[in-house]
Image (cartoon, rainbow, N blue to C red; front, side, top):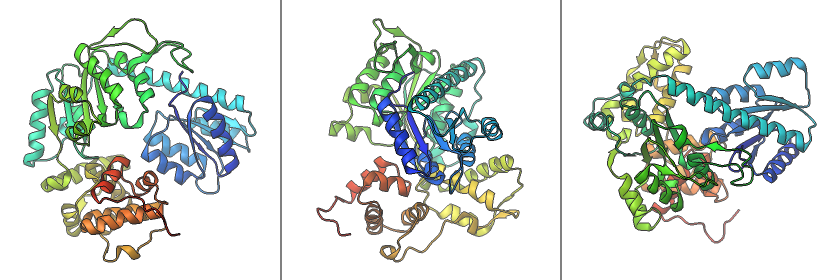
Length: 470
């Protein structure tokens, strides 16, 4: 089990516990972070999942039980270890029933912490591998019916999917964040001759250069520090299936070169291995960036670009297919009615108008989240405009200083909805000022992907001033 790259989150309202655990895990080679309460932790998990979470059971705000439940609902592959200074048999049994991997009483030694982390990550790897084997035995259900809409643009996309799905051609999917690139990839797989085999989705933006190489190609025992045994990479595990490489623009030039060779030969060399392996898989890629522009900037290999630019599919943002908004909203409404046991019938006139008129900067993903929240709030037959929470006055942005991350996120949505370039620039400046001009943290707190946030900074030529007044 490799230690490099595994992401671990420590949650405890005692700072010394967090810093101690992080220090131990960093020395061991893990990528460790901490949060001082459950709410902060869930925001971090929402931005980018963790392989393992270690949470205190009793905290002043959200307790470990609730953290465990919410994490497992969204990311069932994330392992959770519960720590507490109030260890009892009943509480241990309860957290294990809820899906925790293990239970670690305080105080614990560094060796005890390292051992339980090692065991948890080993168990995670085994669970994922077993699930893959089960998926390979069972058929995949076609998902083209989930491509909801009748606008000319989405009809073009559906037609392109139907034409290329039966082939083994490489497909490159373009689209803004939230437009449904993975859904298109799954539709391609489900309508291909490989539909009975495994489908692997890899978020290239969430993996470091070292980790993505070991995850894709695998490694031999002793290939690097922490490689205690052989590990098959995703390419080998996906033999005869499909691999979806999301956010391919984040892959380093070196890895692009190795992927180029793999696409040409379907052969790869695991880390530390002496002989190449050959597999039969289909590759689908996706990006939210202009790869041609990256080629011109020297940030993306030209030969790799032309190799993957075989059959490009461009997904339109939701604002460019307004006629599809309400059908998609009703599609999600039916889903959440079934999931929550509700019978909400639709949207009142004002809610329907707001849904159709809104600009949807987060695209289909944002629409899905809005409908889920509205169904939770709705106690009547129809969802009202107030339950959507899509409107707000933005006449004096510079005077508005939200005190919470949720306030900043709401501010961002309203800015994108109603304001032009001048207000957008003010919004960016405000977000930076609220986060000490740390662009990464500002992007996280306002709910924009870091790369998109940096692109907006470039668009408005915003740079950090030499002197920042307190």
